[in-house]
Amino acid sequence: MSNITEAVAEAKKLAKDRKFTETVELAINLKNIDLKKPENRIKLEIPLPHSPSKKVKIAVIAEGDLALRSKEIADLVINKDDLERYATDKKAAKDLGKTYDFFIAQADLMPTVGKILGPVLGVSGKMPQVVPPTGADLEPIIGRLQNVCKMRLRQNPVFFAKIGTKDMTNEDISENIESVLKAVEEKLEKGRDNIRSIYVKTTMGPPVKIEI
Image (cartoon, rainbow, N blue to C red; front, top):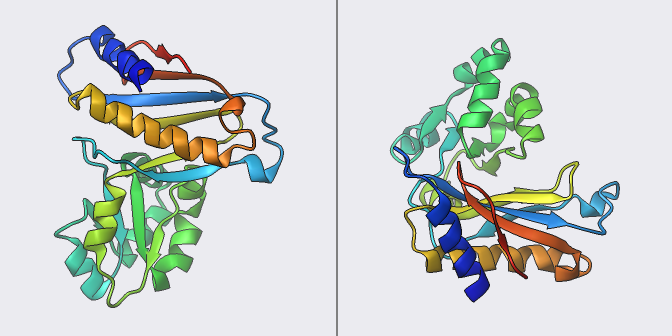
């Protein structure tokens, strides 16, 4: 843990003061892993022990009562008419996928969601979590997603993750990093032996290597 905490402290020290709260990001470079094999295209959603101060943005795709209840707790509510508009505005659909971190969708709307937003959300690994149209309690679902770190291996053998914000303590960020590393090691065939290097940085700051 000391190596991680020292690297986090150095990354924050090297970061210039900004007019916004920078995210703290982690890069895990892998080795000896064949990404042509489907089983190695790992996708993870890791619960973090410490929630970043910068909340993630969550959009709910719903109709009726579920849509009404979602307005108080979600950042955006999209109804069926809204979905149809995205079908004719590809740029707006792409912007939607970039702006929101997680999506939750009413089950009976998923065929429409898949047809219209699937090409955008599928590529970015943001296909919605599905909930029933009645009886769904979104508050605990949204609360859990606020603490989730999403990671995905694509064409390159490197994981990128947002694991905190600059205003968090070094210790809390370090514990988040430890949780991510543990989850990644459990998914890799050779565990830590598949990790080449690890770097931590703020959004606009230089990367600092974590010695492992």
